[in-house]
Image (cartoon, rainbow, N blue to C red; front, side):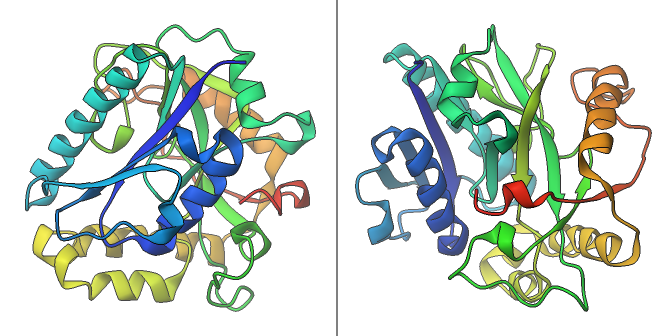
Length: 278
């Protein structure tokens, strides 16, 4: 079995980070989690016990510059972990979860250990929304996937999150500079950052995020909620298979090493087999 680490950076994000530690700790072992809190004013939560969690100097004050600095920092940390003996490093935000399709009957380490990865592998991006009128506000006492059932299959969250060699991630982990990407079969990146309208509204009023220029960015992401509410959901297995092929073939003209899908909007309903994963 390959030795695998997961790393992330967060700020004022206990809600997601708690779930992140629970999920990746269960999959990889808490001793293989590396968490960097953006700012010395941050406090390491008790749920991080057993992980490598620490507060670091705040990286930038404006969104674009801070994001570039954040990914440069995390790329260097990932390279250090690989040099220290890890075979693979998973780099994701605190609201992102790399999952293996339960139909395989494999854990995340078992699945990733079976792959021949030269530089990186991507999981197909699944961006969860909230179906207004059907799904109530999210609660912390139940798995996310028992409360949210609809998502957009798109290119934004199909990221080269798993790396096997020192690389430089672009902003948001969206690409690796100088390298192509490969989307693994039966591997998904579940993004929960904008899956609850009330939480989006709270983020819009967060003074720390507003000061960094996150306001318009957060409001824009509320679009996923509108799409899953208004559009008919399609079959998950059929359309994720299509999306893998489409995203592997189509590339945006401005970035050959990012996936494309001709601006298609695909809304799917998540199968019940996933309901207890996250």
